[in-house]
Picture 1: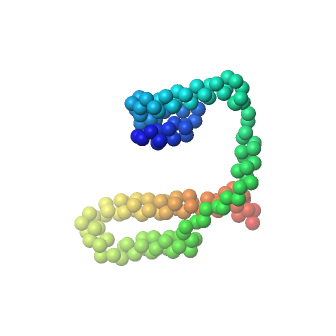
Picture 2: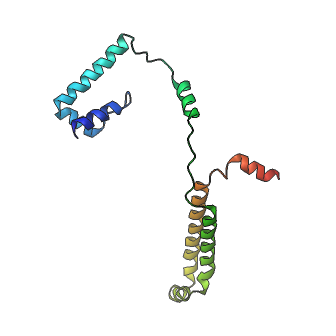
Picture 3: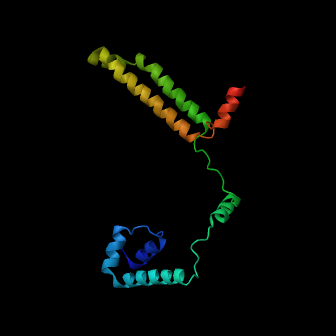
Length: 153
């Protein structure tokens, strides 16, 4: 680790957070950085001791007001709902077409009727994964107010 990166990492640490191993090794080997960190600690202790730096000030309300006043755009969904529906239809069509495939008949001849259970489990897992991804990317649809409105009608 270079000295400038070590100093930057040290200054980014929160109070009481332990030093990363790479930073500890660097401070052990580099006397310049070690001197800087000791001077920095002494400076902060002196500020707290002299009451120039009030540590009991609560800035949380001011910070939250600033955050709420920011105009942060909501992230756009990358896949349209139409494409989700098309993907779901392809999955369903694929499941419907499986029994008519010559590969399916070959696998049943080779493995016997015991092949149907593992295939059913794989198909169920595929649908489950599809639905989990759909729900996770469309959480705004599934909030409690939308669900309540749906059941009130």
